[in-house]
Image (cartoon, rainbow, N blue to C red; front, side, top):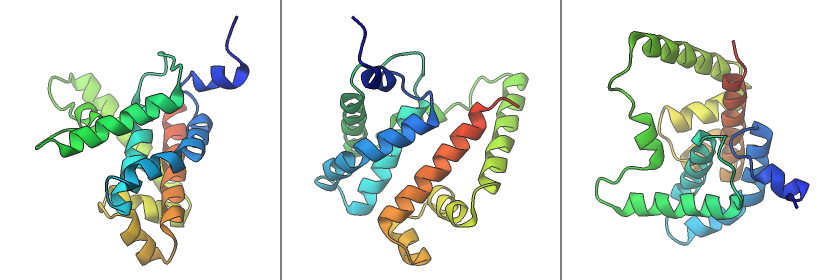
Length: 174
């Protein structure tokens, strides 16, 4: 017999930004506690975001039977990579795509980058500012929270909203 509807929805990762947001709300606190026992609070927030970025980056065609277990496996892998000298995360490995691209692929990449920038420009000002400070200025959530006069949790939610918005914009074909 098939999976109950809730479990079936959880089996499709990276498909729907709303599902990703739901997973962030549902599993984010547990991931924060997991990381908080091992790293500083600011690093914990960043690692939680890295877990969800990795989840978003994975192929949507491969079902996940246990979303929570999969997320915590990503978390454990991120910690392991972080502890290795010169260790690279799955996201860094996926981002290192500079070799062997055809001119067509380079053009497609430039078009996608333009779509990302447009999506970022269309964010509400506070969300855009938090996202830009974190992703482009490499500021921690704690530093952003101090600068904007909001809580670390609020920064986390703003960055998550920004990521969900950019993801949705990229999924919509031009």
